[in-house]
Amino acid sequence: MSVGTLDTSRYIDGTADGRFQFARDLVSALNKDGYAKLRNQGISYEDVREIFSWVNCLDFNTTVGLTFRWGCSGRLIEHSPQRRFFNLSVEEKISCIHKGGTGPMSLQESLNIGPLRDTSYPNQWIAEKILPAFREHVESYYTLSQETSNTIFEAIELGLNLPLYPYSLPHTDFGTLSLLFQDSAGGLEFEDRSKPGTFVPVTSEDTSDLIVTMADILQRWTNDVLKAGLHRVSVPRQFQVDGGTEEDCILPDRYSLVFFCRPSAEKSAGPIHDFVSEERPANYDEISALEHLERRNRLVY
Image (cartoon, rainbow, N blue to C red; front, side, top):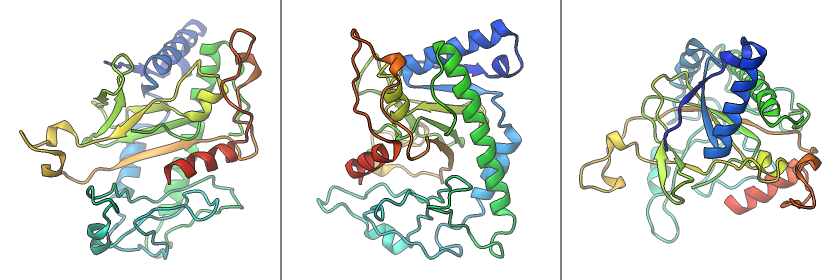
């Protein structure tokens, strides 16, 4: 499985024919593999490098001014979205072992930021005195990611020749689209749909290459016309020890930036009527986006 990089400037600044061809190429890539790599999509190399520099300022061995500390189970608190700082001490990390004794669990530390004007679940920010201007830059990046998501949705609509949805805006992601930048360490792998069960690394020659992943709700909206991309994060092959197991690998720190695009909580996560017919009946029930999120969270956590 080899996925090329699409030049989004063909859609943003191109002719009508160029925009249409890009839209068709994007839908074709998403339909074939569940994800696509985009360049010149509106988030520049400088933007990505700057936000990664802020990530490097976070000390994940301290609480960096926040009191939220999740235990090994990583369970959600009631229906609260994952909008918290994940942090464990070195001792807690070492002690986190699956109950079955099968080895250490996957510990991913992150600062998760949701919609900027969400009053139901407001973001929990690192104190300004601890990390000055951090919030300003993250909010700017969030807004840029939202605008880029809207552009991609417009292109998908054009590629499908249908109005997809109003802009209220091994696993698959829960929402509609995920926008991801990864550093040079890599590690992201997608299932090769021509060989189910086989995963292929996604490499980026440029850290400003945007990896766009199809997610669950977009699959539900299109009634399986587009299918979510099954993916995982594994040990990058360049760091694997010859003849050893994944536990034998010595890995550098790995950083990634991901923007999860999701509809408003009350919006439908059921199939859009344009994709339902007698020949193609609905494959999914009519539930809200929040109900879908809660259902998926129960399965995962």
